[in-house]
Structure formats: structure tokens, C-alpha cells
Length: 92
Image (cartoon, rainbow, N blue to C red):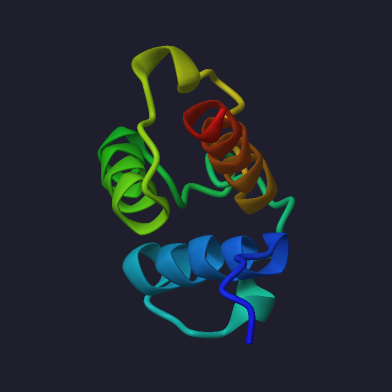
């Protein structure tokens, strides 16, 4: 059995965290991967800090201030792209 974490695993983990913490649900249909978290009012500045803490703990990455650009936390998809970019840097 492989210990490799796939993109689907990362998407599911991020989606699950956001659903649990901000939407108080476990229904993944409520949160499409490309839905704007900001425009939908799901993520504010305090939520962003909580999300970054989760990402750092869950995926073992360091999210720098410079990484948090206006679009980096826009959607589940963009958040996973940020995590994967940090994993590539941290592993490289």
C-alpha cells in the first residue's frame, strides 16, 4: 500500500476542513473546487489565518507571507496549488 498523497487527497482534506470549520457541514456538494471562498463570504481574514495554520500542520509546509497573494486562497483548487508549490520548494 502506498503512502503517497495524491492531489485528490489534498483537495479532499482542504475541502473537508473548510466544510467543517466554516460551513458546518460534511456535504462536499456545497463546496465546488473552483468556488470563490471570498466572494461567497466563506473565508475572511481570520479564517485565512486559521486555514494557513491547518495547511502548515496537515501538509508540513511553511506558508510564507509572500505566498499569500490575493488569489492564493481564492478556492479549494487554488489552495491545493499553493500547498503543492510549497511542497515542491520544501522538498527541492
